[in-house]
Image 1 (cartoon, rainbow, N blue to C red):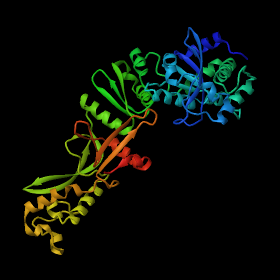
Image 2 (tube, rainbow, N blue to C red; image 1 turned 60 degrees about the vertical axis):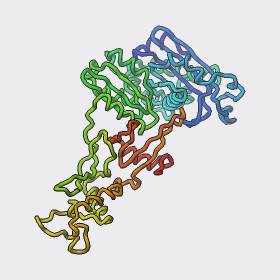
Image 3 (spheres, one colour; image 1 turned 120 degrees about the vertical axis):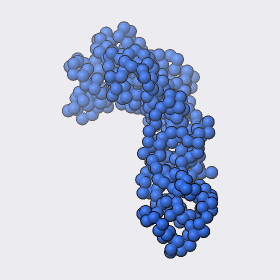
Image 4 (cartoon, rainbow, N blue to C red; image 1 turned 45 degrees about the vertical axis):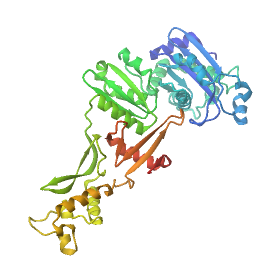
Length: 450
């Protein structure tokens, strides 16, 4: 079978956005380390059909194994343009299109990473034809491109593992499946698009703003008629689409979508803090507890309180998930530094009025001197020795976040669960605690405490 441009163009117009059937060849299958060696695609925009194929210099060695598989050698790509050189030609054709590929996760991720290396934001919806084949033909056992080609008797004039030959077979498969049952094909294909397609009546400014998004770390500002909604994202494009689909009634209120790219989750929090201050966001509670000192009749006491998200001139005095853990920590701290728990107000029970200090009855206690000034001095002297958290020992941490693809990095200081901002303020946010736990678990090499 040989695909028919006019037939495919008519059928693919159903999606109401340009459709790109794409295939890539690469130096290997590692998303972060491997690079594109060839790109080919067929683009339908409702009026025109465009073909593009180009060898790409991957700027790294192609192994003999990959050369035997794809037919692409180091000599063939030596004088080819780099991916960055190709971007001006392909970006206008790929942005805002539905990307159709066999195992689209591989092609889309590799493509997105190449754009990120070049500092160019890129994101687009995808349709995986492996999933399409499995859903359309559930009784078939194999769904790789060779199996699909054999199923329909499809052949290619070129090397099966060259990008353009695979695009041609993929186009033939789409046509064959459409000829089987176009209505079912369209219904199933629409259900498989990731992220899901936005409504057809969505305001044009939303489509336009989304073109500048990437599917990476960043903060998204959704400017509504009366407020600004801020999203902290790991995959900004997809998470924004999800927000839009869950807030359909607000779509006509959206004035603008703005994307602020970052290099990682801590950078997200710092960027969110800046935008929260700019847009006067209400930040609410952090879901954590802290220890506060207060004065009562000249005596410094301690209490466990809810920690609020927001801006502070100094870091909070400890961060704890549960109030009992916070109270236990301050009790142990008082014992260690011989600070009277009665005066501090942290005994595990309440004493009757005028009752003697139980610690003083059993052994020497700081309250025996009745010197409030001494008590207050000791509280302030050892305040920085209070436990930082119920899961973190070091009070001050220095963390570097690096974008492996672009090489960009940002250094951060975190103390007692708060992030130091560029203006010298400290910022607390509930997501910061889970980020720190993840970094200790998976990225400990990026953290130092001196």
